[in-house]
Length: 450
Image (tube, rainbow, N blue to C red):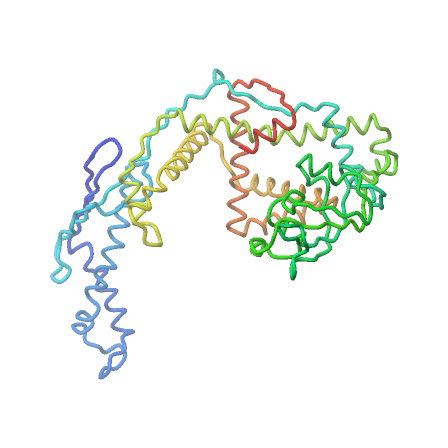
């Protein structure tokens, strides 16, 4: 068996595999002998079927199967021995027939196409400059966090008048366009929150209302989206189109959140006994926690910006025609070239990033070894416990849970991707020049959501 290579261009090449009878006859004979021993043909005892009959019935299929194995092994060995860096797998050359006759087997010749993995010239160094965006931890943001914590540990009580943050318990009655009660319409008791109301006129019309007061409202104006509106009215979202948006709202009760007092009891609930003992220490603790929390988001923004820059500005020459055919041939479901063309830009962009990332890992000897993956997974699990205020289990149990999580392929892929991104971020932070930039919390959220 002989494999030769012909360069087509810088991106692709042809591999020609020549197979002679000496390469396949012995394997075909062994396979046919197995069929002969297992074949159940009327008139013959098991294992006594004449080889000529077995050859006639199974010979062509067995030859094709063995030939496919031989050619695949030969292609793989050639790529490995010649240290070719290719994309995907070799695919049969388009428009080229196999030379050889499976009905009268002799010499065969198969032609396959390969696509080379492009060389990556990465322009990333200490001269590369990127913004490292941080949230400005000011008194306003700390005050908001303290209010949220006090609200979380506060208690609800009834109020006399509606204010800007109250929850209103009310009866909603559907109205006609002329303001009359709709016969057979919705009549449902539910709740709405003043914090959901963004329209200033609507908010003003509800402020100061007392128990028993009636007011006509737009269901859309006092809810957040169709799902929330349907839940308030006691119907399914798909039923909204069959109902009016105008309702008579009768206030049944007004609930107000009384914020928890800033005292030692609250401090102990938040951080454990004695960890914080004054409002000054509380503010310092919250500031430090916010810095730590937002640092991960700042890292993600940096990585996203470097990723965008590298994908847009790193020249990568892909064998596009080859890749489109390879996608079509390797796809489990039948897809047309038109379907591939429609999604190809996105695919090529993802592949380009994978190649850039692979180049960074290889050039800088960055690896994901098993012990590190286990340790990283243990950290993720411990953080999950912390989010629910539960102490993490002992190290042995954490290790067991981490190993269990990695048994799930999807979960393992997710964890490997997270660790790979963490290593990339670390590499970027140690390689490029960072321009520290502080922005407000709202600006940061807007940047992160893009």
